[in-house]
Image (cartoon, rainbow over all chains, first blue to last red; front, side, top):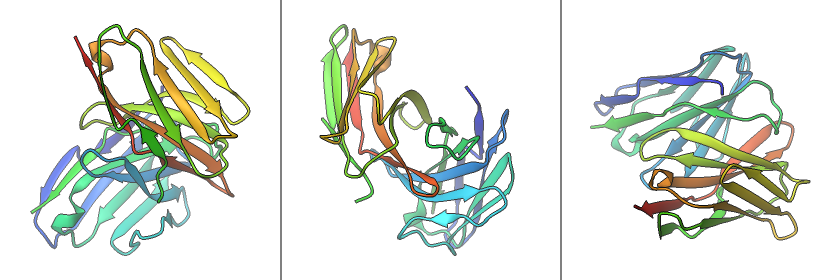
Length: 117
Length: 112
């Protein structure tokens, strides 16, 4: 299957700083990327849908000014957690698909564990 | 709630036994997918079943879908210790763009 990478895999930061997480599709062009967050022993919650070259669509309750998403190319989307606080500590996972079809498989990155002190 | 329901929340079985996990959802869907996640890792896609399909097989996996009851089940036959993981169903529906909603997940533990 196609490969999606995330960087960094783990990050620890101080409260008030901003953190950028990258999601890359390594061997295919991802027209759509999704960002999820997952708390321990819980399911994935969709945060936003990102289409290349356009603004991300955020789910209800997700602050767009806090979680900035940029999908500038067909192989890269970034999630920036601005002014991070301890409650933002979570596992962030991206996924990518090569065509906005409901029958296309999403390929998931390995996740980024964010810890805010 | 964004999530569908899965049961059981946790399942512990002996190696060689079958494991059945169920998923229920609330809206109409285009397809339903099952994923596996090892602790602290990303997700691995297992199987996709379309809304007009009723059953699908892949190796030791069998998935059923009942759209009238808005439910699906995942059966893992002849389980192995390596099957220990969390299993999530995810419903996909298309409303101008497509959206994937994950169920709460079932934590499966297979004892050797």
